[in-house]
Length: 341
Image (tube, rainbow, N blue to C red):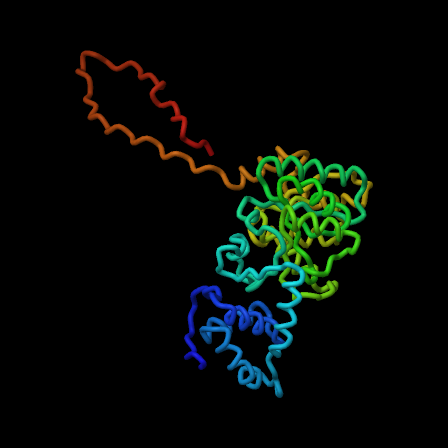
C-alpha cells in the first residue's frame, strides 16, 4: 500500500529495509533522475516508493510523454552483480556513509563500496597528479603518501595511472581509498586490477555509478568532486594546466577545502599546473610537514579566552605639594594574548 506523501526539508532518513534500499536504487537509476532530482523528489514525496509512483505524472507535467521508471529487473541485475563482486551499498544517512560527503549539497544518495569504509572516518587527504608523471613526481607521491599515512591520514585518489597509482601503493600499509569513475566492478585502467584488489583488501573502493558501467569522459569530473569532497585538502603532484587534477583542486577550493601543490621546474609542462596553483594562492609543499602545517594553519586551535581584567582602581590626585613628575609605562605593555594588527 502506498504511503501518503509527506513533504519535508529535513535530510532524508536512510532506508532501513531491503525493500526501501531497492526503491532508493530504482529511483536513482530512473531516467532523468540525477542526484539533485532524487533529493527533491524524496523531500516532496516522503519516501522513494511514493516518488516512484509520482514520477510519471511529474515527467508528464514537464512535457515528457510515455515516461517509465526504471524496471525492477534492472535493479535485481545490479544487486546480483554487486553480490558477485562483493560490493556493499552505502546509503546517505547511514552510519557507514562517509561523513565528509554527507554534508555536501549534492551528496550521492548511494555509494557502492568494496573494502572497509571505516577508514574514511579518519582525516583524509587527496593526492592527485599527472598520468604521465616523471620519475621524480612518482617518487614524491610515494614519499608523501607514506609519510602522511604514518601520521594517521587516509590517502584518497582516483586509481589512475601515474601519481594516483603511486599514492595508492605507498599508502596501502596505512589505508587508502580509491574513487572510481565507472562501476565498482569495472577496473580502469585494466592494468590496475591487482592494485584495486589490494586496495579492497586493505582500504576501500568507492563508486556512485551502476555496476558494470564503463567509465566515459563525462564521469571523471564527478569522480574528481567526490575525491575533493572526501578530503580535508587536495595535494597536487605534477599536473598540466588543463588537467583533471586541477579540476579536483578547483572542486576542493569551491568546497572550502585546502589546495596544496608541489612546485616544479618552469620548463616542465607537467609542473605548469602546480606552479599556477601556487601563484594563485595554493599552499606550497616540499614534504609532508609542509602539508600538515598548511592544514593546521587552515584549522587553528581555538585561542584561550584572555583572563578577566582586574577592576579599575580609583586613582586620587596626589597632594599638591608632591608634584607627579612622571609615570612608568611598564604597566602598559601589551598582554601576551593581545594581537597587534
